[in-house]
Length: 462
Image 1: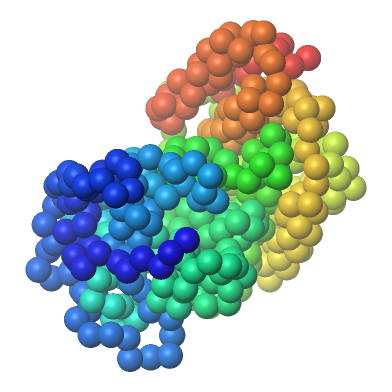
Image 2: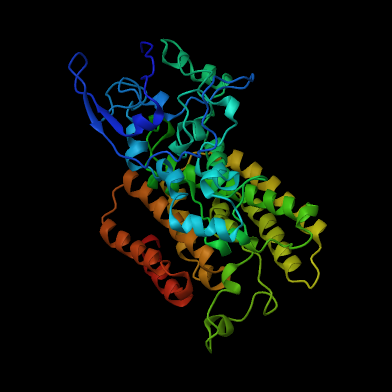
């Protein structure tokens, strides 16, 4: 591909413009797109080139040329779509992530959290924008682009011009700052850095109480919702969605356990540990009408003690039955240990941290094993059968585990029906839709009704 220089406009102007290209050599037609004006106090707008040795962030505008990634339709016989920017700016919620910080709900949250303004706070910008130091921003960079290209693909300053040259290899871009989103494990890690959190980014109980939605994650589902703006290579096979789901589950379990271990060991949590967002929210946030289904069911732990939220494992464990039974047995025992540790009047933080780290280490092994596995129809159907047979998933582990079960069933069946012929596809889809309806209102979640609807799905995979 010939080298193409970026358009001279700023990224804010470009985001108002979608360039429609017909055929090479014909005239270009411009369509103007509105977006909210840039607030005058946007905190990290740079006017000078980077002054450090780090790779520069060039902004979404540097990718939006109609001859590069800003086309209106995918081009045939190319290794990439070349309309990635257009898909992102028109259909991907990540492109509107900064704009969310300007609405009334975000302003109210900022007041409750004693922040100045959400659009100027690193606490918000770290996940709602490409929040990087000013000296790593070029003139075309604009923080109001939201979660833009470089949030996931890394700073483009090192490889922007070079990666269009004939013979340029992906590995060369990686050596110059590009993030390897083609690697399924790294892809999951990148998503989870915001959709679960890191040691510096988190959605904790304080933020949830202020109004931030709790975070759920399932890699293949989240990618389908984006929607994907890339092409999965054919060599990944028709069952790649199942592998992506499995790897995402393993990495989410690993990162969740690493976070639990960090929090248990950190002196910063002395005043309010455990972090309540790690526990089952609806152990406390539920109606106390009598008799409640929780009282009828009985409590997994001591009544009044919220149990550990094991939703990142409850569903994933079913895949391990046919993939790695020994690891499943070990993980079952470790997760049960954590439940017992949280059912104590005094939390043994060091023991909790050690156990969580042991689970994280096993999950890391699993992620690597799963990423090299060949999934097929038999394994996929076995997982669907196992997950849909777990009628206790909502009753024992609550709505967060029920959410994971539904997302799992949906994503695996999406791959299943693409790879094989399913005569009763419409009936299965309708049954899965009923499960999603059960999750709409967490306060009204009925695990017994959910179990009945889960049985209706299970009968298709017996």
